[in-house]
Length: 87
Image 1 (tube, rainbow, N blue to C red):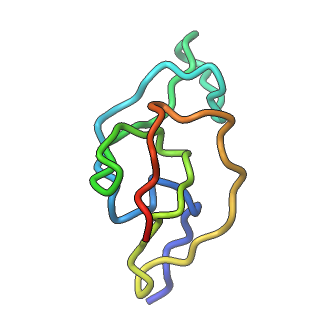
Image 2: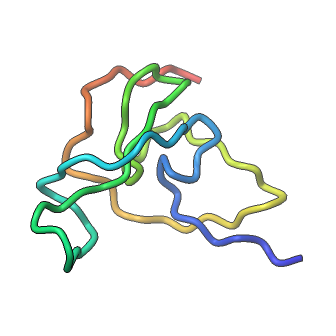
Image 3: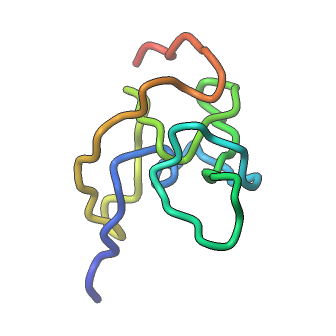
């Protein structure tokens, strides 16, 4: 079986739990149906905060046997400010 290719961001992380979409002034995705740009967001069980799916932090972990991850640029600001947990 081939591995799934995912971005190296919160949406691919084991600590991420999806909650929905939020208004985002730097949304990286175009949206032709809704005038308000929205980005997926969820909770991070490691840092205990809400995060945009497109965020990147040093606590990133993923199922190596199932996914190949590729580097993506980080956001200019997080959904909620937080102190990253040291590993």
